[in-house]
Amino acid sequence: MGADSEAPGLLAVGGDLRPERLLAAYRLGIFPWYGEGQPLLWWSPDPRMVLQVQDFKLHPSLRKTIRRFLRVPGGELRVNHDTAAVIAACAATPREGQAGTWIVPEMQQAYAALARRGFVQSIETWVDGRLVGGLYGLRIGRMFFGESMFAHASDASKIALAYLVGLCRRDALPWIDCQQNTRHLASLGAAEVSGAAFRAHLAAHVGAMAGEDRGAQVPMPAPPPWTYDAAAWQELRV
Picture 1 (tube, rainbow, N blue to C red):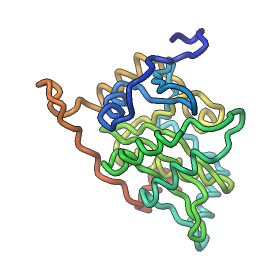
Picture 2 (tube, rainbow, N blue to C red):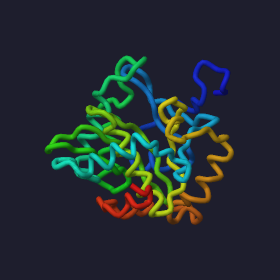
Picture 3 (cartoon, one colour):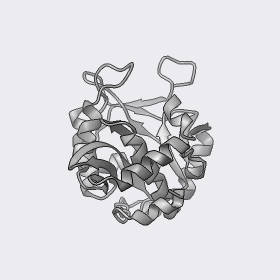
C-alpha cells in the first residue's frame, strides 16, 4: 500500500513465521509486524529508514557516557549472552504512543528459533549483573536488520547501538535497517532511502540462498556469531 494509504508499506496478509519464510522475506526487504488479535501482516515501507554506519552520529555526550560506562566496575557489554531476555524486554517495555506490543508471543518464539540458527543476534548492556538495555536483529549476509531496542537505564540502548555500529564497521556491514522513520534514529544519523535503493542494496549485500539458482531450497548458512571484542570500540574512536 502506498505512502498516502491508511497502512503505508503493507504488502501481504497471512502465511506463517517459519524460519525459512522469515529469512526469505528479510532478504527481499519484507518484515512481519502485527499486534494481538490481528492477522499476520507483512510490510515493506517505501521510503525505508536505514542507518549507514559511516553516518552514525556519536554525539559528544554519548561518547562521554560510553567512556564512563566502560570504566565503571559492573558495566558490561555482552553479545548474544541472553537474546531471549532482550526480546522479552523489548516486548514488555512500554512505548510512547503505542498500546501493547507487536512482539507478540508467536514473534518471540519465531525469533528465538532464528537465534538458535545463528541469524538473530543481540547486543546487551549489563550493570552489576542486571540487563538494563539492548537491541536485537537479524544478521544476514552483510546486512543487519534491526528489530527493536529497549532501555531501563539512561542511554543503555544507545550504548548498545553504538557498539553495534562498531561491529558493523569492523566487519564491513555498511547499512543497518531501521524499518520506520523515528526522530530518535534520525538524531543518530539514520535517514530514508527509496525502496528501490534499499532493494538494490540487499541484492548486492545479502545474496541469494544457496541452491536458489537451481530451484532448491538449501538453507543459507548463518553468519559467524558475534562475541564481545573491546577493539570494536576503536571503530568509533571511543
